[in-house]
Image (tube, rainbow, N blue to C red):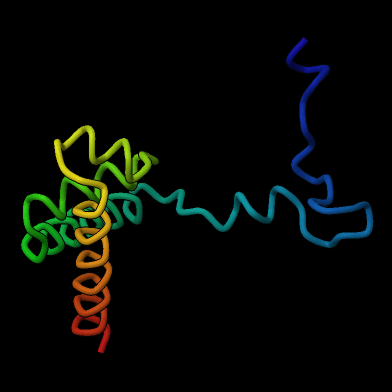
Length: 105
């Protein structure tokens, strides 16, 4: 059964006349173990730096938001008002934008 319902990696992605295939997309991903390890180290470093920039509440709100929770769900989870959650996310946006500008430039 699985072999009968496979998806060809050489099939055009969008329509039959497309030059781009699923294989092209997959090849763009990092598969070298060394590169994967370095990417994980970079991610851990960035997460640590962001943790230092955000307050505990902002970190909790961001984590819940990134998990797909709504403002209402986050408010209930943290025992806060929805407006408090909105304010925290606005602060997170400002702080992360500033953090990115300081570290990219």
